[in-house]
Length: 186
Picture 1 (cartoon, rainbow, N blue to C red):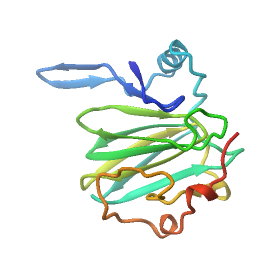
Picture 2 (picture 1 turned 60 degrees about the vertical axis):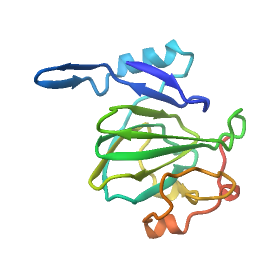
Picture 3 (picture 1 turned 180 degrees about the vertical axis):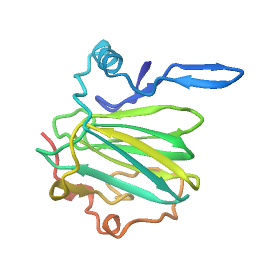
């Protein structure tokens, strides 16, 4: 596995090793020891134990996010797309970070097989770019409804360059707060 910096402090692209032959391909999608060793190898803290896996399926144009859980129930996430394609976005909510208020976005797809490690302290969202997009993610904390929060996807303070302007949101995401009203991390 190879880790690639994104420019946001602590957020890295995870490129799994793919073994291909005439039958197809194989990849180890997760190995805790290798993942922790890779993070340590580039000077990042351990991810911690993953305690929950989530799987969503979205139609083209569905935007989920920008979600986060407030302390003490913050979550780190290891995200990937196993079918379809999504534009994935993270926003740094850590006031003490040199990249506070900045975002990173990238395509995740069944074809590129990339993953993204998002430590605690970030808002996260994605836009399905194809019908039947399956998004999987591991979290380091359990879902805690009273701690969930959302930042509006097209807040002008963030100026995120989403690849689509016509999106479909859940009622909860339509009621999201602006970036300025977010509960930031220290």
